[in-house]
Amino acid sequence: MVALAEQVSHALDQVLDPHFKVGLNDMGMVTDIDLKDNGQVELGMRCPCIGCPAWKMMQHNVKSKVSEIDGIESVKIRVDWEKPWTRDDMSEAARSKAQSHGYVI
Image 1 (tube, one colour):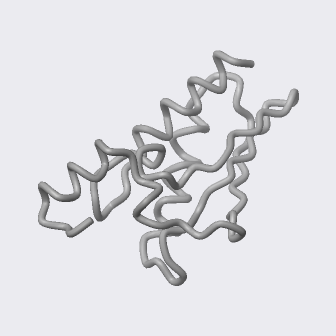
Image 2: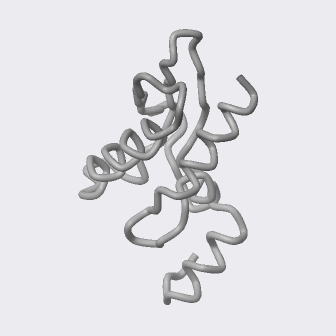
């Protein structure tokens, strides 16, 4: 299961936030990866903002990318509203990339 969780995490690194062009893990949007024995994975994710125009696209891209992994039968995304996403959740690499594109972080 650990290897499968690492594969899921790696897949999430390849799904980019469309604004910053940074993987969702580095963006701090992924809160947890819960693998079930039946091949189902439930991902906890934080939406960057209410009404985010790219949110549905990001969810689609996550499901598509994670579903490519052998052993994954289904992908469910749970939105974590308890702790809203903030720029403080971004990794240092994500901050640097955003700043290099002119964003003030």
